[in-house]
Image 1: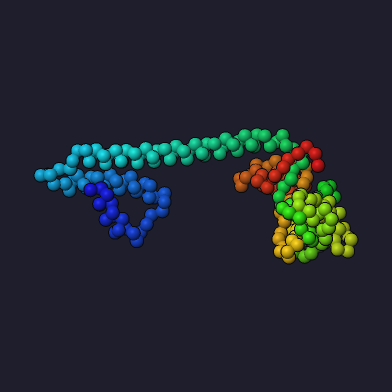
Image 2: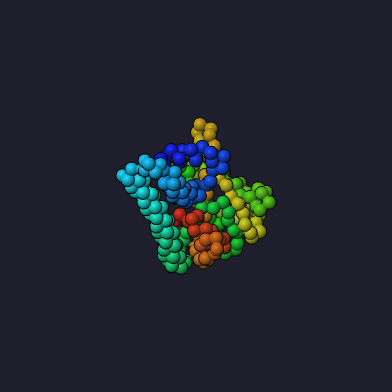
Length: 229
């Protein structure tokens, strides 16, 4: 019987298990080999019942169909992904000049762009602060949050680009984080973002990038695109 032979085969090969992709291929080939072995090993004086043999062939046919269906579904998913990406890439140039909200912990300071630092908080908090650091992880400025900034919602700060002493910082890349404290004393980090005009769309091998405030940001970092600030 096919099931009996399969069970014995599984026991002897347990030490060398193939990966999932190999198992689907081996299952089909193994079925044919076992079926052939069964026919060769049958007793000529008592051959297998035709109905049972037909049932096993039907099982093999169903297995073949399932493998073919899986292959077709995988091809369709790949085709749909390519089509979606193509449509998305075709529409992106029309976004130039519009304002985008992009989740990031980095901002590029220059004499041209506004330094908009934003964060989201899921509920009201009792206190919080925004810390700005340079590429060397040195603290550049600390902004204490107060008033409406502690309420649930989305908040933005237009940083003037100064350090703790009130001096203008050099142009370049800076990081920022927002730490919030609940009334029960539990602290957490808020999701941070920046906003700015989409200056360019770049199609790269690692995905589509939008240039916002001089920074290349991945498409999946963008949450909103609007025609205003």
